[in-house]
Length: 317
Image 1 (cartoon, rainbow, N blue to C red):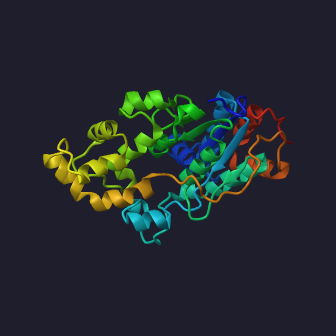
Image 2: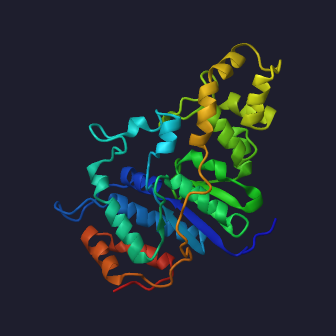
């Protein structure tokens, strides 16, 4: 199919994925001993500049975790991200290094000052915001999702030009560009939807999802390829398909409760309530004073200038 706006491209940032990667991957090089840590902020801005230069989007949204562990996912599977809860904190408090925590408000300020929209949704993760915006723009303009999280591979859709820029292995500069051919070659699944079904069977220890015991990635992919989707596989199990037998049948039957609950956890929302925001790239700095303050206070003037150059905006102040 053809896009309504074939010359336009929307870049959706999994913001936390990027600033966590920056914090752990960029050296902490402060200009003076009493200066605040700036590696997450500096790395985030540098990655943003690289992404703008490489993909030349016309639209962009920095998607945000307003709730990193939504109640509806925890209710479905209580172990969901349980290992990331801060020790001694409440059930909704994520364990974050203090040196990173102090930089997140500066990232918020930098985005606001630059005029780049930051979008979250109460009760939802950034993944859900990304899924909702990708769905809203599907068939309208090309969409690139930037993340280090494989969960978002489920959004890949060649027919509507939705891809994932996967940063987990090579970072932003040497990222994998995930389309349906990548999914077939790497995982043996034919589409983003098939990836979600395979991931449900496989599980994901990093998110506290147990998966079906004894069924790994390759077996899960083969089952989805054979039956088409998870619902059809489960119908075959329930219907006594003789091709599903022995230990494999026993494992799938034993996982009935998990398989009832897991799709609601694994599948990103496509209908999260998000504000109607103009996602077009800014042509001017939104708040010159705030941007100057961020640059000087946090020692990231060169990184700010890189972003302004990528946006084709003259340096502020």
